[in-house]
Image 1: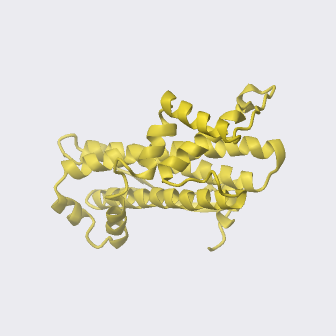
Image 2 (image 1 turned 90 degrees about the horizontal axis):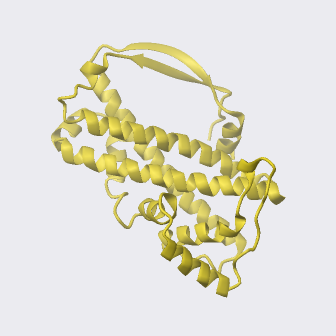
Length: 252
């Protein structure tokens, strides 16, 4: 991977929203919803990547705190991806396939991303199961089942972190619940694996989720850009700072 710069160039486009996104166009509302979800996915993925990097480069209680943030952000990312999948399905069911093909003509990357996204959000998909089991819902029956099993196997760590800055306190006893419920969502039982294998399995799954987030961004970017090509858009060039932690995480 090439070096990540301190600052990155950006193009800022301004346009007439009533012309590009008219309310009587069946594409408008599903696409706006999908754009909302895509931006949330981007925010969550950047924060997750940085938190994961911090876990890998700290030890002790500091690592424990970063790990809590990382697992939370991963679940949040899955939840936003799930909502993006719902919005994508609504768009695909609202807009004629011929129109999407016309918009994506000569945009091979956008078309390829869409084909990867189509089967990615079913009821049994990993992001859906994470969202439903431990991301946006906390099912008490699942908590009881997993806690009973892990307690009987002596795999529950009776610990917590109490910090004078309350937002940094954590009930680390619940880590095993979040991790094992994510294991179940992945269809993998990591309970008997060693720590290195456990980390690698999570890294592999996280890589798949990040790739899905990038596919979503690629498709939506191409679709919006294709719409803008038909209208007068004022473009200015600027740059933004790339956070040092994000640069380090991308390089790593």
